[in-house]
Image (cartoon, rainbow, N blue to C red; front, side, top):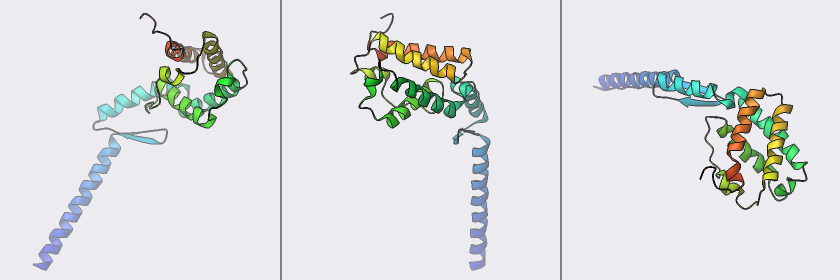
Length: 177
């Protein structure tokens, strides 16, 4: 009886091990690694759609996280040197600001990581920003992208995204409303 129970237990253990191994293999088969993150999917078709979306994104085309990090760091060097807008950042934790900007731009450009910060209208509501302020910031973004030698077509896409935030950043009524 004891030998039979031991044999049954060993058989069950082998079965569970093979199921776990098969489950891990299935997860690997439907997973996609991107920038140090592994994304898992229920089917190969879902995985393929995700890969196509991510690798076709503006975020991927400009170079992903490394490119956004470099752009934001250079961008804030320009912004903080500009007396027309730098006073907005006098009491701002710039390390935190860099992180928020990187998260926002990454998501806006198509990163698979969603943006979880404040919406643009709420984030800028108390700043009393003007068209001139927006233009100065947009100019620094354009200069940053040019200095980083991004392709003009990519710069145009990025500047269009920046322009699409203007009404919210300036707390103006949405265009056409």
